[in-house]
Figure 1 (cartoon, rainbow, N blue to C red):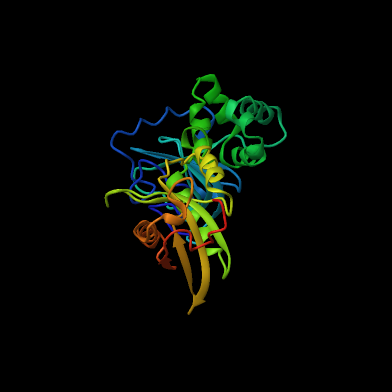
Figure 2: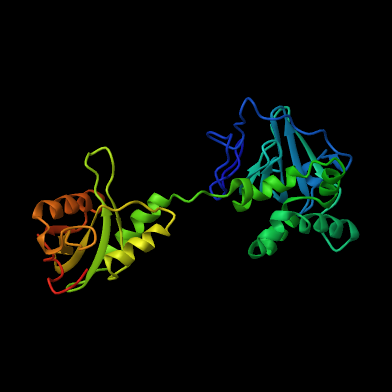
Length: 315
């Protein structure tokens, strides 16, 4: 656990607007909200009790966390579930705060329990559309809210119609809604084909379809669903989020493993996407060159026609 003037944020999601520490706020950051009536200044750190929601404010800074304990020096303290109330972001699972010049500490007048105020705050949460859309996260979200916020704080936000401070922070913490992680489908395609290649053992083969570009400014692309015919493989590719238009197809067969490196034969002899048994070696060499470029840990041996699999097969 690292000490401030930066909070530990190794386990937190990356926060936009923070460059080299959680206290580095963009110049265009929105202003901090006006303090509600449900907070009181902290005169002495010794008055804080475990579980209290502590808020730290200074020009350009407005953060809060759940108080855990004082440090031995009596001048700093440990907090958990640290959030930024200016950027509405989750900063860290835990950190140590040492109040600096110009900073003021406050604590909220309530924490979550079984009282009516707590139930009212949780009712606000359960009515949120994204909470309803993610039943698999409801328990985790509820526990996070109980740890990181005060029920009187949520009631104040609701009264002011500014619940985005709650909801956007939750989205950032759980990567949902506006903070949902975007899938890199090109990476998924690359990794999936690589796994299929490396799973081949001596004597085993797979069929593939591929796009082999005519210039070096574009990457080759490959797809397989095991040993299915090329036509069926192409149809499945059309249904994938990373779909591309293949211009070649063939077979890849593992023939041996030398010093831990798998040796595979590669042909481009698809009857649907090539000339079958009449496919020239040069086409297989282009396919193998692309494979070597993307997956250099295998030894590729291009062969003409359908020699990586067999002339008797119809695909």
